[in-house]
Image (cartoon, rainbow, N blue to C red; front, side, top):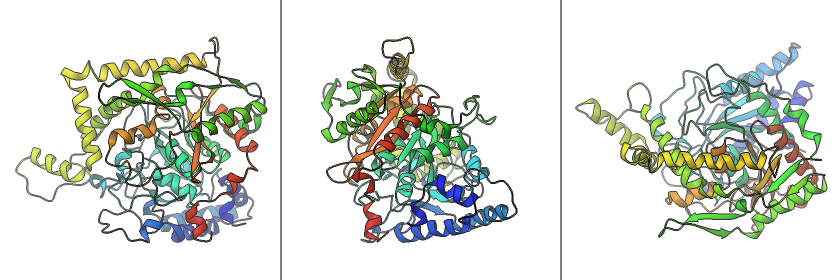
Length: 532
Ligand code: GLN
């Protein structure tokens, strides 16, 4: 067994006990990166070689020297008998949407290509204070806008370790691919409409979107401020619980970070599911799509292999003592994507105003005769197509003459989606659910190039993840099985506000119940082909 086969929890334990050194763990992670990652994303990438097409390309910036210093300091502190943090010596990666002091923080955009953050984001600071060793910054869709990681200005964009001709999902594609390929044990991602859970599902790893406000957004380059949630990407449920316990908690620098104590997430793991009421909803078992002609929402059945993962999980949890409640209505989640289209674009366009070439980031090299021309050229050159589209749409639907019709209306429908979840979870209501089970995505990972360019179709990859963002509730995606093409399929569990312990209980119970199944032994193709 290679030390790369241990979980983050086990690695931390072994380092604490002196059975492994942080430096040797780091060297193993760096060797894995050298073996499978290929060249990091750059702005001037030229032609893709056949070699490029077989590698993972999770990274934008590798911080190996900085990581060596961190690992050496963990080993020194251990030798000196100091108390180590819960992640001491565990190599991790950070989605390049978080600021890390002194390191370039690009948001995968040309407009921030020269931006060195003057401070460190709170969740990153907490990970490092807990002893985690940062391997570097990983790739994503430009400004997190996308579901495939293909829109990054830094190419080659990340590929799926299970099949490098496919996308890793997005926008935290670098995070999910890095964890799946063993390039670091944990990754910090963000989820605005599904950006942690969808890539976790595509890459066969665990991804958690915490309750809105559970984790501080300070130092996160903002997309949709009312939706953004930093959260863990990990190999298993226990590692996700361990990571959340480190990053969660109030923060005087983010007034939306909840002032609630952080429970002992690890303690919730083996409490089992006996007595939990777990719901299934027909509204999570079909794809809802606006007819391009009429605009009416039409529905289509989901592929059987996707539904089956969720239904089988319900059976397994029932066998463990959970009570399964069927036919829970969530009628308004069918409007999740249209509403997200409007709200997220309005918030994105507002948040992108600050990138103007004045105080930091890229500024045009062309001549300009006044400030407006400088702005115009900087933004035209600095933003890729996806941010430009989102600015245009966000400005349009929030303009005074259209706001009532689009933005204000979207906010109302968002409240109706929240009300659907409230009714399902209401302890006095007819369903009284502790959690809901649902697929994470309508399909397994798709081929690179297949959807990129169609921003409406791309958005529908988030169909089942976006409702939890609208409602603010926590949701986890776990590997649930493999498709007929041997691609990972995700299982999603959704719980009421701040009920992350329920997600861990149910997720862990599912993991235990399926621990010996054949699909759990399958490895990503990139690793198999490299003999790893
Ligand atoms: N894929 C979604 C989008 O394009 C979600 C992105 C995210 O969660 N950051 O907006």
